[in-house]
Image (cartoon, rainbow, N blue to C red; front, side, top):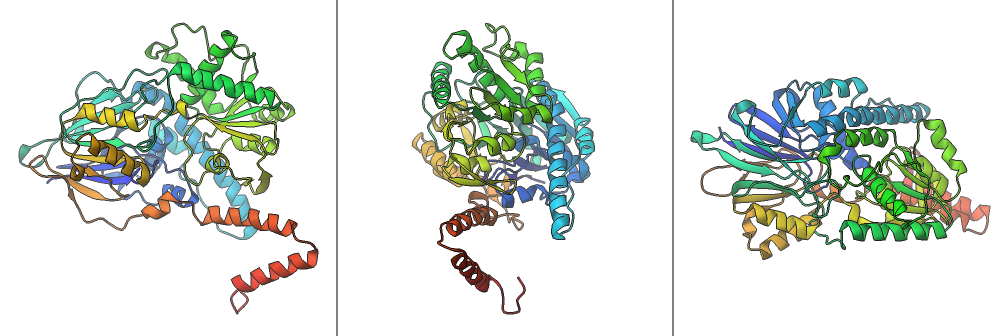
Length: 534
């Protein structure tokens, strides 16, 4: 039997990282992440995996971000009984992240089921529950990043520092193939930038058969991302926001982004670059994750001269819902960090509802915003948005700092790939949009990489990996769960929300009630069939 790979996620899209490997004797996964973005993309989280969980022998996990780990509890729920191998720091993060993700699933489903009951629609069930998350955590076994390890099915592997977040790894594997010929493959995971706070520069081997590499920012070149340059930019944004006389809302990812911001704000304050402002961390998960960073403090860079950037006297960890609501009374001069980073869940939505309409408020984005998310709509300049069914005017100052990204940009990714050469067979570009993959592919070609060796798989595509001569062979693909077009663009849910906002604004601008009623009647004639039923 040969070695096959199936791209079950993060193919033509940035989220849902999941790769199915079939080797003589069985199957295993690299990552099992949640899809984020439009409702059409997120619907994949509720459907079939594209494989049978009970047939898997084990899982190797690159890092804790939910788009790489978030469907592990569903895997457990659906019959997976093997081990999940990852680093100790990743396990420590998941101890909080997976139960938090389950709580979000359960809360969202309760809210949706209340609305469904009012509409006469059937109830739905969460993707997984807290019990599923706890069961999944019991399957995790930690590994070290300092040598070769033996896994089931005759698979050998090494975990390398990826420089992305605490505990992140690239995974090098030798896979048993036909006639005793092994296949040597490297999965990049997510690669950190050159000037990543806390993390040393990424490492991994060269001279391999196959490379599966992320391309999140494969089409983007960032501005100067040094720590000094980033702090200078953050300082200016904070000073401008103070001058605007409003609060500063930061939709922040709980893992590493919140901690980086705390360190920078602490440094700016201690060095009299900004006034001492109250900083509220309104994310239960971020509060817990910060404790994990304290636990692994000796593994992190940039903390040697700091006396406690996560515990400053101006830093307040919001303890409960009532305290979160109490932040509404603060009208200016506060920094409020809340999850989620893309504004699709969590406490940040509450704060956006109460601040977006205020021209003095500043919303500062410091992370990637996936297509179709509320964060993307706000960041792209929409003047009105809907949050929990309410129409909100966007009058706040909308600002972005890209240099906090935990992903390498185009130049850094191309340089990282160059250091892995020779790659004797194929380079698979994953975890990026089609646009970013095309751009990264062109840059790799300019460095001398053979164009035919660069592949850009679509979701559910399968390839045969051969240790002998020749490139990977594309196999017949089962019906894909979603098309590239559906993954890459806004969906009808986004179109509907935009239509409702535009219609409401148009109706308000009409001269009288009769004109409004006439327009609505005309619309209904176009959408209601002749039998009168919608």
